[in-house]
Length: 229
Image (cartoon, rainbow, N blue to C red):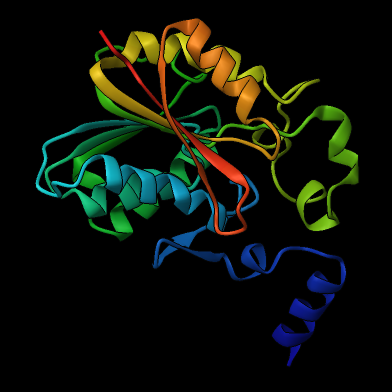
């Protein structure tokens, strides 16, 4: 009874259920979540759907990089779908990295990936076949208008995309050119109404825009780009 009352109090204060239970489903997998990680959302699964379309051979041996890994949901889901693939996850938060490592171990892919602290791709070397990222893309001025479950509990650095919501994409675009192998693909989540601006940033950096895919609500959600040479 005491536990139930505690849950009621926390939900009454608008704390997300995922933080109360410590778990959230993503891609039919159970992930540990906590206040240092963004809660995985259904629309982010569009990244995995698009990746499966690009790489139909599930036995392919790929190198994948997940920038801003958080819970590790994207990286773990990708590694589960491609058993011969190895990955690297980067996050600025050591606590988020710890959660990601536990999730990788929970789903049996811990030996095929490395999770480490980093400021986006600043310390990443080598090249990759695939880059995944769900960067912060909400305009700073819009944060105050978000639901209390989001703005009062989820980590602001994982939400705040700067004055125009595009700060992370400006950083990521040239890094993707540097880190993608020729013919390699990057898949990034975008906010509503950002497809044209993010695509322009990617084109300016020298990447080819392959597709802008909608989520289940029909909102353009995932931008896929390719390194030509």
